[in-house]
Length: 262
Image (cartoon, rainbow, N blue to C red):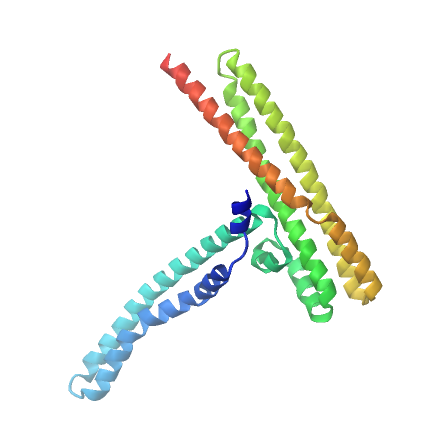
């Protein structure tokens, strides 16, 4: 677990790769689309007799190169999106921090992005508190989505286990019931944490709107620190729960295979 948490931090290599992928589509498009047309265009200036031919080749190569360049650039954009999704999943494995919130902008609401931008321009202390609270809210939302998916998986497995012979079906149903109860507890806790974070976001937005004093900011930060660190524990529980579900699914498949063999 310790090694996994260490690997879940944002590294300089991650930041460098992200910056490279930001410019890679544009660079790839220009390198593919422009060299051949420029070459033929220059040749048209130096070759009077065949100038028309070179101009035609320049236009043709520009169209073909632009098409190929667009395809390559699109592939790089899709790869960048997939890479960012993998990076966000890795960072969220042990809870999102304030420094990593900018990478989770697609998971913010429009109002949250606008409020964060406005607060950063006027009050850095409140901006730090807002980012911390956003990190807690996004983490809790991710836990909820994951737990809901796992709960749906448990329900499907429970329906499938009904076709097994007794007492195998009874034992598996008992394990799945325990899993369902644990997932229900995770959902309840995560929804509570998300509601607290959303309320804290509104408090910070209101404080920023009226120009909060230093004392008010300190109170907001103390409240935030008191409630921070809860969502990562829920993530750990969800991660362990997923392992238990995978084990139950393997057992269910092995039982089905044994029944089919008979």
